[in-house]
Length: 103
View (cartoon, rainbow, N blue to C red):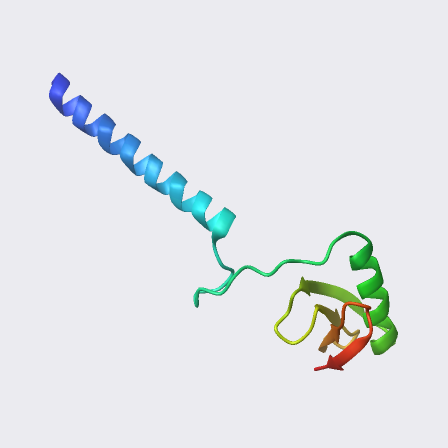
């Protein structure tokens, strides 16, 4: 292969790598978790996670916390609890960790 063709191939490889890398960064940093363009959910962390989990389990009486979200569209905190039979219950909590509703 002559020098000109090698440069063209190398440029194509570098460009493709850069585009793939940029796409991965965009998805990881600011992407969404679905295909409708909604924002990525923000999980509850720290002491708030402990308090929200305890409050949700007090409502359901049993189960395992399997997902959480701050700033849910229905309440301040949303805690998903999976019951032993596999049923999922979403417990909606206000900022003081009081139940707003379940669904």
